[in-house]
Structures are given as structure tokens and as C-alpha cells.
Image (cartoon, rainbow, N blue to C red; front, side, top):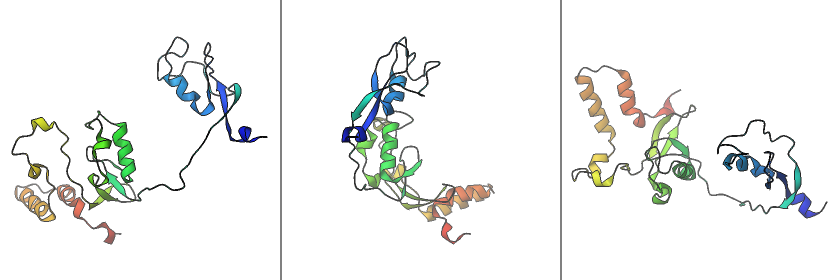
Length: 197
């Protein structure tokens, strides 16, 4: 066995009737899904009766795989500034922003617009519920900047301090709302769960 055989990847023929495309075995699935013609059918769908079992191998191709020796990654959870979902580190948020670019209130090119400091570092419990904000991030205005009123400065999108949240809860309670869930929702970022069992 020479190096090319050992390092090479299988090249297979597309199993769709009438298609003679030869692709790396690991890419044949995407070839079928992305092709749209009479044989492959609609893009994004598998033709009836097509299976990836027993693909015809037509050769091998040398593939250079260059894995990094180490990767700079974080062991913290960060929050998307647009949808408030949490992800593993800044790279997780950047991948998410790239996937949702231009959709679901995520602007086009958001992954290029942000620095890691723009993503709040949060603490999660064992059920992946946010229990506190470790390091806050600047609040992002996700609407159309042309529609902002002049009075909508930073103050309009500022976060509240714990004292302000306590005051807000007292005002709500004084108004007759006696719901413990309201207090929990308002004070959740400030509750220290480390001392709870």
C-alpha cells in the first residue's frame, strides 16, 4: 500500500440514474441534495429509491488535511445580541450570526460587524438556563437606524441596575400584581445561584 492509497479518500460515482458525476465519498450526499435536474429532482430533496449504500468506487484521491495543532476557543457561554440565544464561546456566536445573516432579525454581515466584547458572557445551570450575566455587553439596537428618534440614545437601550430592578418590582407589586414569577423574571440576572442547592 503506497502513501496515496493510505491517505487518499474514496471517489464514488453518483448513484442517481443518468448522472456520471464522480465525487469524494464524503461529498456525495451534498452533491445529490444540491443538484436539481430531471434525474436528481428538486434541490434539497433525495430522489426516490436513491441510497448511499454500496456506492460504486471509481478511484481514490489524495486529500491534504491540515488540522491545526491547537485552536483558540473559549470555555464560556456567550449570548447572541439579536436573539439572546446562548452559544459556546465567541466562535459559536459568530457561526450562528453567519448562518442567520439577513434572517430572523439578524443583519447581513453581522459576523463581520462585531468584536467578541459585543457578546455577553453568561452563566448557565445544568439545564442550560441562564442564571446570571458574568460580563455584560453593549446593547445592540437591531432595528433600522434611520427610524431611531433623536431621544433614543444609549439610555433607551440601557440595561437596568439591580436597584432599578428592585424598584421596578416594588412598583409592580404596589400596583397589585402579586406574582412571584414577575420577581423571578426581573431579578434573575442578579440571583446568586452558587449558594443554592
